Image (cartoon, rainbow, N blue to C red; front, side, top):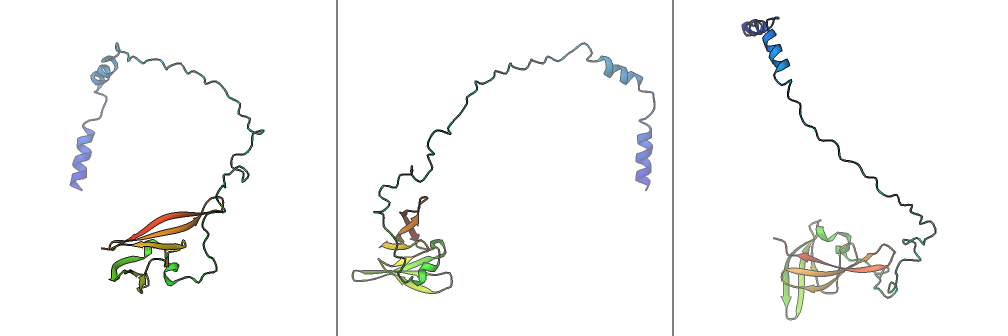
Length: 164
C-alpha cells in the first residue's frame, strides 16, 4: 500500500501547466524540416484479353485422354483369395530378417497385429495388390497395381526395408 502511495505522489509531481517550455520546443524544433515523400509510381494498366474457349474442345473430357495401352496394362486378379498380409498397408508391415535355404529365400515380416509371416517371391503383400518380385538381405521389392485417374491399372514400384 505504501508503494502505491509513493508512486502516486511521484507521478503527481510530473503534472501541472508548468511545461510551456517543453511544448514550445516540441512545436518549433522541427518546424522548418519537412520530410521528402516521393510520389507514387504511375500505374500502367495491363492490356485486356478476352478468353473465349467455349468453342474449343474440353482437354479433360474422356474422349481426349490418352488411353493407349490401357487395355494391355496388367490387371489384378480380383477373384483370387487374399493372403493374410494383404489386409495391411505396406508402411504398417516390418521386415525383420531373411531365411536362406539353398536357393530358396524367405523374408520374415511382422504384421501390426503381432503375427509373424514368411514371404517368398511371388507372394502378395499390402493393400494395393502388391506382388513380391525380389528379396535381398535388407529389402523386399514389390510391384503394386493402382488405378490411374482414368480407371486404368498402373504398376508402381515399392519396397519394404529391413527394420532396425
